[in-house]
Length: 96
Image (tube, rainbow, N blue to C red; front, side, top):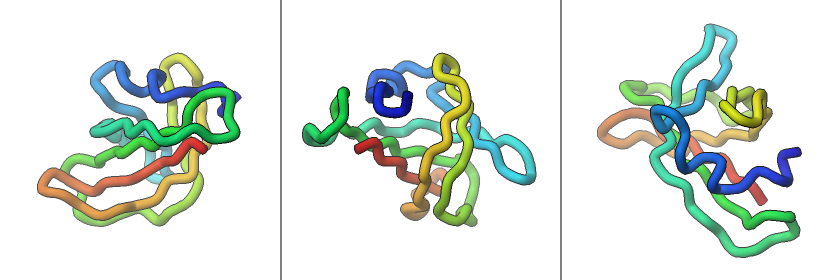
């Protein structure tokens, strides 16, 4: 299933956000950028998501997190913290 998910599945999300499940509960992460990458060995083009936890100054460890997608349901995605900006902590997820 994950190999059929494309960038367009994240470009028009309600409230432009995804719920990430953590041990402490769910946290909403804002989708701040969808970066289309070069073609790869997938049925759809590769892309990266840049997410932000608004207001956060501490990061979660890189690893696999469960996200709740409105059309695709539960997605287990490897997530990497990439640093903060003026609004919060940012994370990246790659689909290759």
